[in-house]
Length: 562
Image 1 (cartoon, one colour):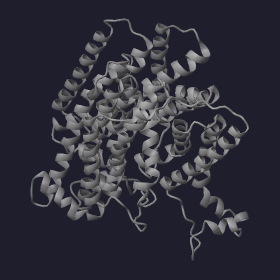
Image 2 (cartoon, one colour):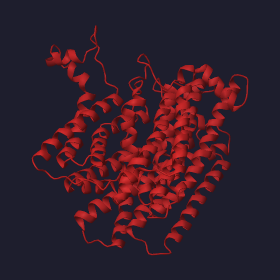
Image 3 (spheres, one colour):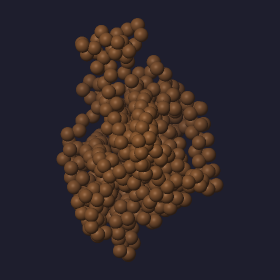
Image 4 (cartoon, helix red, strand yellow):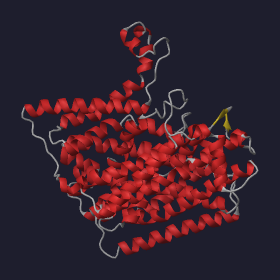
């Protein structure tokens, strides 16, 4: 039933008041001294390691994970958890190799890195690109999927849900990165507590349905009645192979997805750029541990919903069918609607916390890029600190208004929300990551090589995406090109899994960037390398022990659920 009881609203109100009053207190404390742009955009030297780690997770986990990843858990099982578990390993790489480069070179935004390493043209192109991507795609999809999820649970009008989420997010964002960072700690608390409560109920429902009780019994029943949903590495005959193509999740495109997201993304790295190296690394390590926990919250409920659907529990089959087809993305909302009063309010607060934290983080990154990389460099080069903060706040409001206007135009892809977002973000990731990784560690990389990666990476991604379609065209049907992409012994065309496609595009971008750079430097083109020394990559003993534990747990998980 799509309603919340009085106790549910009371629980949600407690969550809202705690976040609001804590945010107000942090803001008052912060404004005891004069605020400048680095305070507002980066919370310079004021976030602790636990605030950084919590903020990373709060900004990352949203309706995309709660709804989309649970839907993917329903559809393909534990294999989708590879996005979370491989992210834990990726965070360690970012902490050891990426963050020291940013901090050593005093880099606070991604376009600033591109300007410092390449030139103003590359930086401005990417600043505009990121701004459009963050506003039109990311902010809008977070707002839409979040509102859709809350509407599915509460029955509140979809448009009203969008307005309420936007207003709540704006209030937090206007306080600056410090308010976002510390309120994210509370958001993560509710996110994990409410998420675990939903997982507990889902597993207990499975146990009860089979005449037993208890979470552990429910989990054991899942592994028995959905054994095919507990394999991390999918084989070629699996219907979901195109989404997660076998070993590619360990040695291929999955690394590009994660390294680009966690290491070259203003929205994420901004949390650590205002801290010293030790604090930043500790915060990222904390986030890696939290990442190991996330599949319990966002994947297991989807698998439980699959078993309950298959067993015909309650009205699962009716609730999860839309237009005559099963809609995996409805798995989590259907589960939440089965929660008892009070517990449903807690899970509702968890979902809202995830959406609001992501919206606030994304809006702050939009404001940071526009103010520091466009307004300050092009529109008003002499803008003082107070003016920059004002512009940043207005940017937050305008970005959210644009998202509200565009959000109702979005639809849901049959792939499921999470997979849809991953695939289409992958059109840009390989080229951007190639540009960053060579820019970090190869001083001879030239600006024109970076421009090729920016444009060429996208063009190549589109080409490989539509390769089967092109080969099917009548004027190519008898050509050698068509035969190259046809499967042996048949006429069916082979679609390249998008993770493999990302790997191919990344390798091509790196090779072409290398050739362009070698040619240009041989002609006397001068490049601008970053300040790097081997000592900056050394870690302290505490971080090393934590990293070993994370890697050990990952090895154990992949060994058990191979």
